[in-house]
Length: 318
Picture (cartoon, rainbow, N blue to C red):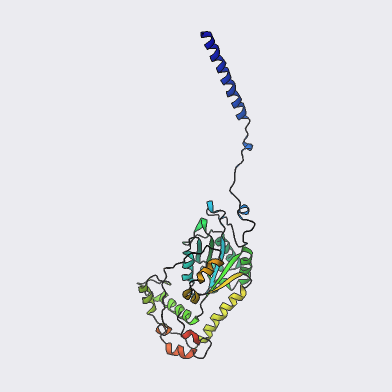
């Protein structure tokens, strides 16, 4: 019996050793080149063949879009004039969870010294590498900024228009119909830059009724001699901007329509291919009510515009 147990144990040991030797031999045959790394999907693989041409898949240099690599991004630019409601409009857009509108990026002159500087800045924005307080980063569904007509836009309009078409940038023109109200806002804002009526600070936009009332107490004096020509120049400037960029994909939005008809915001969201949602803003309008309450030399202004194409501006609410 002892001999049989010993022989059985020896047979089992030999069998187990043979199995181990075969496993070692198999492992040694595996070479490093046999291992393939599964890579992240490229932008070409992300885009469905039926995808709209205005969908983009940026590859930022400053961060990784991670799980949002294949989320399409729409490019847009808001073209406007100062004190036309662009700040309020931009806060509405930025209340959308996936919209990044980065403000007046061309305020610094260095970014608009020449056409090359302008295009480099545009590349930075649309590559998602311009980081601002509005940046939604990885999962942005639409990215853009606002651009005032007097910030190099009109000077290099041919290069910019070509860029917009090549990169698939959607243009939103935001204008104000009542140019007289815009002029009042421009003059009042310019005065506050130096007067700093709100506790020694200058604010172009306010968030409380008390702040709005404090700023609206100042009544500017309008130069009635040049008033008609000033209003005409504003209208011509807006018309030229539309003419320069009429070859791009664009829509025109008026501040007054946004105030009186909030369904216009749905049109904007549809234009940017965004899932519609309620857009909100904390900004409070400064100059409310009749214009006669906000212009110091109102009688003179009223007399100047009577019988002109701008007479309707005297009575408009917004």
